[in-house]
Structures are given as structure tokens and as C-alpha cells.
Length: 411
Image 1 (cartoon, rainbow, N blue to C red):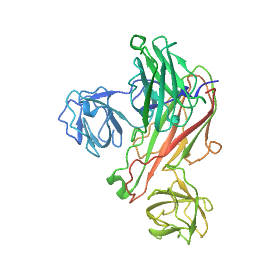
Image 2: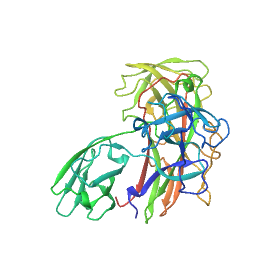
Image 3: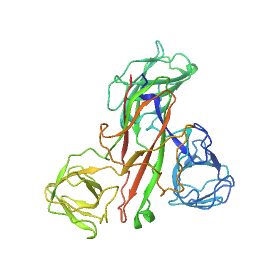
Image 4: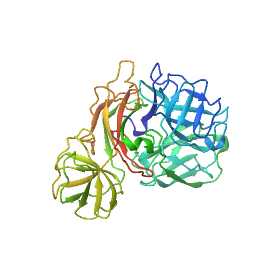
């Protein structure tokens, strides 16, 4: 039986030719500005990279740009126009990568949680931190006798010490095996005494689904993204389900009064009681009517909801009644796409073109989630993401919708 750390997520490459290939790196060798990039190595016709998420390589020449993400508004030949300015104009030696569409999984892993590097446990470097750890402060402990590393994550308890006597890559987890980090070791640099390091974990933003920019929210749009994943282990990962979680864990509420059917324009909506912990804008789901609305300007029990027209996110708009049950909903939907015998998957023509044959839903439990059954060793698959941006969507910092996987693993 496989381990949870064997399930890894990767960026796709719309120009790829095989599973696990390279995610191309481009050199910004033209007349760059903070809002545009030029590269003679760019491929594709006009508009080919519109909507792409991009990031500067971790070793790019300009230190301040290393690891910075950006969002492509328009592309024309060798020029990319960005939605928002990056922190500095790229130099002609700076390099970056672009993520757009589907087709093949690359060997470039989607970043895990951001972490502070250990200071005292010399010779031990963190390479990847699983999202299962949660954010906050974890503790990395080093025992000189036996050359072992122990990990105590923000939301769990310390696990079994892992021996790292030889140089290599090791997975160190908590007592449950579900919260893990990957470390690389260099025996020549090991500390001679026992040490502990506080490792602060934070969640990165915009690494797969880019920000919803102001020009996108004016008229609204629907965007699609592919998230390939692979069982990197040598054993089967059993009973794998994908599902979603809203940005914060809050209780349900009920409607006070009514909300008209679509076509009536934006309306007022009243909660029966102040929804503790709810954001000021987001999506609300009416479980009685199996319908959803985008809400905004919430203050206390009062909010506005936009006109859903005939329905949004696969729902048919209906009138809402007093005492209907309401719940905060994720900002995205997910669906499973077909995989080719060569591990390829569809690559839509643009970010607003949905993959064919994919049924999107918003499952909030593994039982209602997308079943990927058993993932064989080295098996690749993909989950598709639909991001509906309603017209007039309000700005919100660090919006979060989580894709979760439940699997039967050894830890």
C-alpha cells in the first residue's frame, strides 16, 4: 500500500510530447518592463498564452524576481502583456516558465507550502512540504547520535525519527503519517549536537489558479485549469477521491425572507443570524433548492447577491424561500477528464474553453467526490478545475478553495 507522500501534483505543458517531460523555461531577452516580458524563445501564435500563469525561476538572475508569479493578459508573438506589474523589470538574463492548458504532465512539481529554512540542523535541507501539515509553526528536531530527523507539524504530533545517515532524499512525517515533509541531507554538514528549528509554514498564492483581475470581473468569465497528479511510489494507492473545501470552515445559516429567481437583477439577501466567520463576499449554496448565488457587500446579516440569470455553475436558478438552509461554497468546481493510453489529456484552445466530456461538480465530502479508484504505481491522472468569475465580482485578498484527496494509504 502506498504512502500519502507518494501522491504528487505537477504543472501541465500544452506543448508537451510525453508524460513527465520538461516544463519549458523562456529567457526574457527583449525590452522588458514591469508589465511586459519579451522572449525570442516564446512559441505560439497571437493570444496563445492569454490567461497563462507564469513564474520566474528560483535561480533567475534578478534576485527580487525569484519565485514571483504573474498572470498573462495578452500574448503576441514574442511579447507577453501582464495583468499586473511584477516587482521589477526583468533583465535580459532572467528566465521564467508558463503554465496553460493541458495535454501532458510535466516533471515540475506544483509547490507545496512555503517554509522557513532550518538554521540549526545544518546539512538538512527542506525540499517540499505537503499541504496536509497546515500553516503555522512546526518543529524540526535533529539528533546527532544516529543522525535522525523528527518532524512535529503545526496540526499534528511528532512522528518517528528518520535516520538520514547517508546523503539522499527522505520523507519525514508526523505520528499519523499524513503530515509530511521531504528533506535532502548532506552528511558533511551535520550538526554535532542535538538541535531544534521552528519551521514556519505559509500558503503560497496564485500558483495554479491566477488572481481574478479587475478587467476579468467587469463582465465575468469562466476559466479552466488542469492539475495532473501521479503516484510516485512503488505500491498502489487505494480508494482515491477528490473533493473540495470552502475557504474557511464555518457553520451553516438560514435565509430570512426570500430571493427572487434569476432575471430580477441584483438583490438584497438577509441571513437569519450573523454568519460568524463568513467572508464579505463569496459563493453561497442553498441546499434546499440546490442552487447557488454570488454574494457581496455582506455586513452582519445583510448582503447583496448578483443576478444568476438562468443559473450558475451548473445549477438551475429558482426562487429562494424563507428558512432555506445556506452554506458557504468553494470558489471552484472540479471534474475528471479522460486519459489517453500515452497519459495525455485534453488541452483546450484557451483558458475559457472547457475540456470536452468533463462533468463539473462541487463535492464537499470524499463520499460525494470524484473517484479515481486505485492508483497503480507510477500512474498519472488529472483533475480539472472550473473557476467561475461572476460579473461584478468583488476583490478579495488570499481567496482560498482547497482541493482535497482522501486515499487509503499506509501513512
